[in-house]
Structures are given as structure tokens and as C-alpha cells.
Length: 244
Image (cartoon, rainbow, N blue to C red; front, side):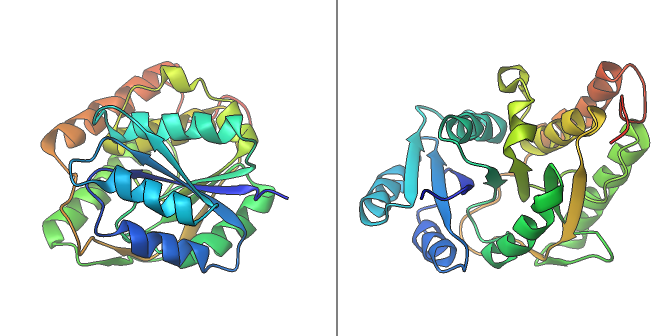
């Protein structure tokens, strides 16, 4: 019987991290598959992913021609997941900032909800290896999103999530055009405003030790504008359109 769980990991120059990540995921006490969505990494991450897929039947690779943004990479992965019948669909970074060992707790929470968010700020702050400036930016962004949209979520910009199939199937993925932080906010808001059930589980976030961060000023600006667009789409309501 094929696994019901798929972990989607978008990659761009993650060759240093990918083998260890595959090993960590395959060692979990959970039956799951991994989909690597590679944006034609110059460092050969996509080639390495193919080699790992040849060794592990649980590993699959989706190659994209160009670096086209995190949001579009995830949407491509979501479509693949829906086409292949998975019930629990994760998004997770490929640099070990998200601990694979947290996956069982996500799956437990996902049994009676539509979207599980990994929160760095639920019941305290659990962030390792971030400078104070970066932490304050993230905390300020979370507060900004809550004030503008009304979503009572402690960590709306986080990228460690588990979707139930019905949640992703309810979205028009072709209509999602944002990337970076704003992609995370947009997807969560679309599900929240339509009354989907959302839960948060606490996670420990450890900033990458290998490679370089993908953060940029453009990503921050996009997120600042996105929340107002979402408020407009929700007809200036700061609550779901129907009870969750």
C-alpha cells in the first residue's frame, strides 16, 4: 500500500543538505514519500536528487527549468501530490531549519483538522541561530499580519506545514502568484477565510548552517503588500466568511 504522506521540499543549491535530509526522513517511524522540487540548481542538486531517487523508491523528483520562486515551486509540488492521491501533504525547508522529527506530531494534529502550522512562537519563542534583527523582523511581521487580516495565528510566515488533501484541493493553485513569506501568508489566509480548520503545533526552528539564506528585501516588500490584498479579497472582513 502506498504511503498517504508526502513531504515536499523545494531545492535550489541544497546539494550539501539533501542526502542527510533523505536519511533523516527515511528513518522516521512514519510511512512517507519525499518529493524534491528542484529549480535547476547550478550546484547539481537536481542530479543528486535523481541519484537518490534511484536508490530509494520513496524519493521522487520534479525538475523545473528555472528558479521561479518558492511559491510556484510549492504549487507545482501540490499539484503533483493531488494527482498522486496523497492525503497528508507537507511543505518543509531542505536546510534542516525544520526538524524532520516533528513530522509525527503534525500528523497526530492533522487527524481532525485541515491545516497544521508549525509555530516558532506558540507558547514562547523557539528560534536558534538567528540574529536579533532577523527575529524582530519575523515577530513584527507576524503581528502585522494578525492586525491587518484578523488571523489569530502566532506564526503566519512559517514554512513548515501539513495540509489535508481536501484543503489543497479547495484552492485554485493557478491563482496563487506570491512567493516567499507572502506565499505562506496567502495560502493560510485563503484556507482560514473559507472556514478550514487550522491548528498550530510548537516547533524549534534552527537557522541553516549549510548554504545561504534566500531572504531578500523584495520578499519582505511583497509580504507587506500581500496582507492588504488579502483583506480586500475577504471584503475587508477580519474573520472567516463562515464559522470554522
